[in-house]
Image 1 (tube, rainbow, N blue to C red):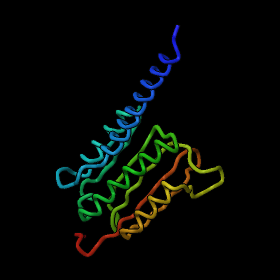
Image 2 (tube, rainbow, N blue to C red):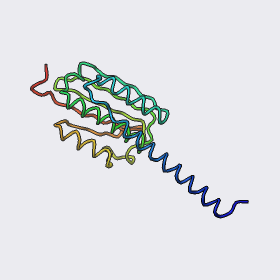
Image 3 (cartoon, helix red, strand yellow):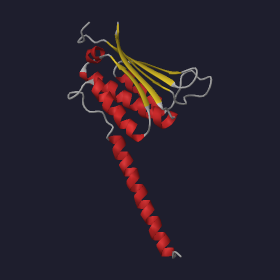
Image 4 (tube, rainbow, N blue to C red):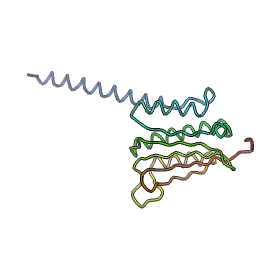
Length: 173
């Protein structure tokens, strides 16, 4: 038989354990911040990010990065693209329940195109442009650096985020 004091002590231990787990998860999520691209390539940074996300839960990633396209972007824009991918992945996992994420970074005639596609639950049926604080934040982040973004609900399931980074006068043709 348990006395009220023993039950109270057990509950306090459970509460302390839960708080510790919550702190660990928060620390882990903050630790997902991508490394500065001075020490690794864009593809390597994405590989580290996907590895960390897979350690949280089972996820399938399809990654297609054109290394030349990544180098076309100025260092600040490469870091911006990396942060944007991180936010898009986390948003897809947390809010849309995605299990499959695709990422491509390709060069185009007028710059570089970053595309993230997930298989999660997106907007309400019939709604072409999904909205929400996370997606609105991604669009706002892109516009701050002069990039154009397009967020589209896919016909079957999922969302496509496409960001076009323009060529700058410092970029080679």
